[in-house]
Image (cartoon, rainbow, N blue to C red; front, side, top):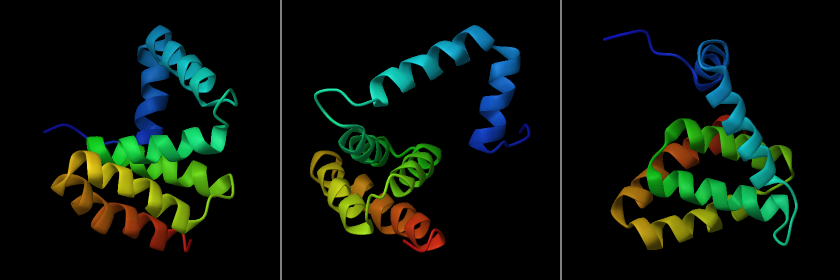
Length: 109
């Protein structure tokens, strides 16, 4: 098994080794996340919910951190994960009760 990277380290390596793809993804992320008909705060909560539904721990950590930096509360984050639980069932409740709560506790939110 190869070396395991943090999301940040891995993304930096991708920017070096696959720059066109990494840059295109970054541009897409920035465009999608900015204010539009839905504000960026709502979009970030959606990103948390989808990350939980897809069971992507690095995504959960990234989007919770960004949401908290935007002033999103613990209660709002947990309510968003309720959508994940409804749509994804057991795996989403498992990720909310382990990963989401753990990340929020680590951040003291």
